[in-house]
Image 1 (tube, rainbow, N blue to C red):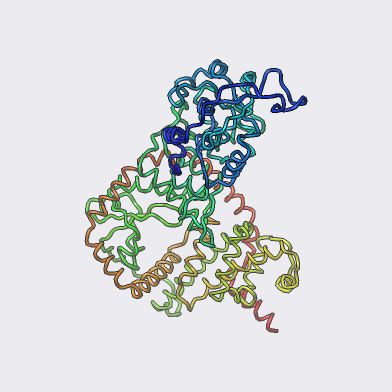
Image 2 (tube, helix red, strand yellow):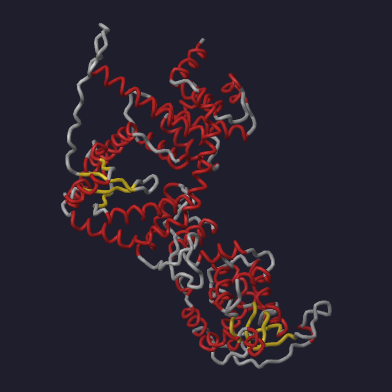
Length: 623
C-alpha cells in the first residue's frame, strides 16, 4: 500500500495505478435504456457509457489520494466488495471527453499527457469507482456529459461529490483548491462558483499544505506520538493545524503574493522552520496550549535565538542548572554588561519555557553590592532595627508585592474558565496532592470566595457563598465554583510561609503564565528556582547514572555551542515570522489592559493583607 507521505506525491499515484491489474479492453458503447437514470433525471446532453477505466484520467484538481487503492478504508473496501459482486459499478461516475476538458482547461494538457498517456476521457468524479474497476477487472460505468464543463461546472460537481465523503479530508480539499489555483482559477472565482465556500475557508485549507508530515499526521490521527489521556493517537483539529501552517509555514512561498507585515514571502524550507512546527505541536500536546499561543511561543523563541547569536551568547537549557540556585544574581540586563560578558566569553542565554522569551546571564561571579551606611538626623531614642529585623521586613514586603501581583492575574483568569477536560484533569491532580481538601473550606475556600466576589463572577451569593455553593444543583454554577476553588487552593498553598515551594507551585505558575501572562517577580523567581533545583536533585538521586551522563555532557561545551550557533543561524527568519503574530499579540495586550481596567476598582478595595481576611473568615466559621 502507498505510504502516508506518498499520498501527496503524483509520481507515487501514477505508479500505484499503473501497477494495478489491467482490465480487459472494453469499448465505449451506449448503455441499454434500463441502465439510464430514468426519465426524471435524463439529460439529452448526457448518456451512460461503459469505458476502459485505464483510458479515463482522474480529474487533475482532485486529491491524488482519491485515485489510490486504500484497503484499510472501510468505505473503499465496501465499494470494492459491491463492485465485485455486481460485476461493475451500478452508480455511474461522471466523465467528459478529452477535447471538451482541454477546451476549458488547456493548462492541464501537459500534466494529463505525462501522467495518463493515451487517455480519451477525464473523470469529473468517481475516481474510486475507476480504480476499483481496474482492480476488479470490470467495465467502468459512467455518465458522459461534456456540458458540465460550462461555467466551471466540473469544479462544482467535484466539490459537491467530495464534500459528503468521510474519507475526503481537509488536506484533500486543500489540494483540490491548490490545483485549481495553479491551473488558473483564482480564489475569488472559487468563492463564486463553489457553494458554501468562503475566502477564509480557502485560506485556512491552503495553510494546511504548509505543514510538515508529522503535523499532517497528527491532523489525520496518524501521529502515534500525539496521544490522548488513554494513550491513543488523537486528531489535531484542522483549524488548529491551519494556524500552525499559517504562522510557521514550511514549504516554498507563494511568489505571486507581495510581502507585507501579514504575509511575508520568505523561504520556509529551513531546518529551524521544520523543527519550529514540531515544537509548536509539542507545546499543544504537553502544555495544553492552543495553536495561537504555541506559535507565539515558538516565534519568540526563534527571535530570541537569533538575538542570542548576535550577542555571541551560548544558549543553555537552564541557567540555574548551569550556574546554580543563585543564578538570578548573575542576570545581565543592560547593553554594557552584555557586551562585557560577551567579550569575556561568560555570556549565556536561556529560553523561557513559559513564553519563549530570552534571558541573559553571566557565569562570572557578580561583585558584592556595597551597602551604604545609614545616615540619620533623627533625635529619636528608638533603636535602629537589627539586620535580621530589616531582612524580615524586606522579605515580607517582597512577598506582599508578589501576592498582590498574583491577585490581579487571578481576577482576570477566574473569569476565563478552562475546558471541561482541562478542569477535570486539574481537579484530579488536586484530589491526589491534598489541594482538593483545601479548596473545600478553610483558608483556601475563603480565598476562593473573596476571589469570586472581587472578580464579580456570578452568581454572587454574598456572605453565604460557600454554603450556597454546597447546596447548588446547577452544573454551570458548579463549574464556576470548581474553577475558582481550584485557583484558591493553589494560591493558598503558595502563600504558606512555612513551606518550600515544589512541583505544585511550578504547576500553579504555569497556569498563571499561560492563562494570565503572569511574569513572576524576582522574589517568586527565587523560590521557583529552588523548587526546580529540589526536583532536579531528587531526580539525580533516584537516577545517579543519568547525573553522571549529564556531567560528561557538560565537559563538551564546544559541541553545544556549535549546535546553538547552528540553530541561531537557521532562525534568522524569526523576525519575519514574528511579524505574522504581531497584530494578534497587540490585540491580546489590549484585551488584557481592558480586563485589568475592569477589575482595578475592585482591586483597590481589597485589603492589603489577604491572609488576614482569610483568617478572619476562618474565625467567623469557627464561631
